[in-house]
Image 1 (cartoon, rainbow, N blue to C red):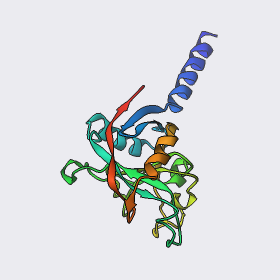
Image 2 (image 1 turned 90 degrees about the vertical axis):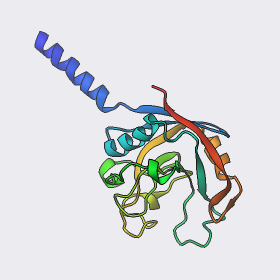
Image 3 (image 1 turned 180 degrees about the vertical axis):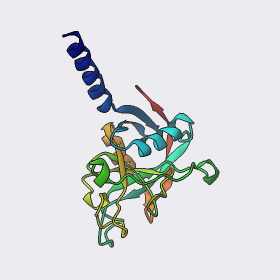
Image 4 (image 1 turned 45 degrees about the vertical axis):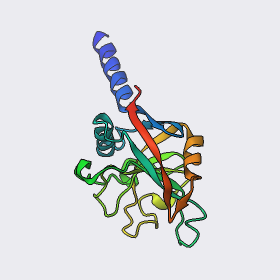
Length: 189
């Protein structure tokens, strides 16, 4: 009896740990965005993002780019995102291995946080937030010709109105005329 209770408690603790999320706040000059991260599903990507957060490297960075229906009109595969996390190259950490949506089971939905990249395994500090469902950014999606998609690793839980307001800022060729300041990103749990 005692053994089965202990086994049940261990199973319960394991289940709770495997479902754990990490919460952070992105404080911007336009308002706050709260996010949750999924370390059990995307451990490499979450650890990478948190290494920048914990080192304070996102402090005084910015959201610097937006993809909108207007500036994507000429593209065959159109997306809606805001991109942030720019920093001097000397502060960037080593690129990480891509955790595809095929591996993680996550997908690019409204509010999804994902890592920006050029080639597979090239993501460092830059991330983006989806506005609306963006299946072309998933593994096998047509947005990136290599078919790997992008590494989704979190979700906006509060502040999508701030994300949308950031997206509406004046831009030229997808880059904001005046980037929106990221004051800091911190853990909140």
